[in-house]
Length: 494
Image (cartoon, rainbow, N blue to C red):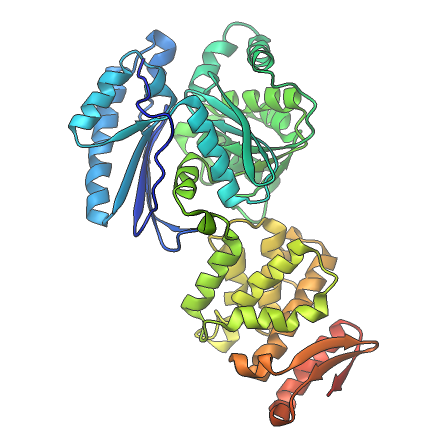
């Protein structure tokens, strides 16, 4: 069995392109990140299903075929990382290498090849998976289940921090052997392990799903329910979906599984094992619902390498601001616009005010597009952009606000399926307020900073300085009236 040479994963500030090689029990993956430190984009992502953990069930060792496949993949990843220009390449290994009796020999081969590998303990693996979820869903609170090939990590999250965590020998590559004993063996094995570790049921909290096998289950659920926005991150399922997926998989053949978009054949083979484990955990832990996180161990490692001030940034606002600066005309425009329209929405929740702010930061992204297609540009950016820290309802509201801000009329069907009508009505008012601000100011800050919007009894009032009164032209007046009408108000100009 390999032993860890470090008590804590390395902490280091990442500058420029960063890469992580994750040597897991089922897959080996290279991910290269670039862009803003808080929420970098994935520049390159490739995995090889080496199956290092398969031999553990048989004889406690990594088998020769898996090792050869792993070495080939790692040689490719190592060279690719250099050619891509990765300045900080971090390589970590988890359960299979940690537990295998020939794990140390495998690590020696990697080090001879020039890869400095960090062997994470079960506790470290769990901790980083928890921080990964928080990196992408900052308000996550409940339990995280990170399902790998060799192990399952459970992690408590609350108040933006990682709490108690544990690692269990319940990786998806082990489940088939447990299930083979008898019909109740998996349920008993899970309950015995949880009881021994003090993880009792009845929590009534969300359960956050991390790992490729559970993401594959989510893709199947999306396919079965004809979900209109096939984005895995922040996808929600009722707790009873776990048992329903077990029933469905019992009757689905390989041909039907091949029809599921984005579901790899390698993952399909272990779907039933992953579903049965999830069903047992949901029942045992009393989970209130299921939330999928596309972020996990790798993102947790990256997140924890950042300075505290950057980690504390809101990932949605940070990414929207970066995109607004990149595509917009005036760097400060979005924040100024948000402050300008905020008095009209003083009673909104903090969560909705955050979505409104994101819409304002993205309000200038469509100016290069043909005028007839600017509403579609706004809609597509919000719905399909690589955002985190936002769920489907939030995407729909932000998309509808941008659609309205660029002159789009009505509600696009996909948006109507993702958010309630009253939420979309509020988002439309955000868009109309943005539209007024854009026309009044021409996109620059000066006119907005010198003027003010307010609701005064039955009127929506726009206050301008005497010097700026000439800005109140016909098109500004029309947009003022349209916005006021959306509130059921008249207009006033002071």
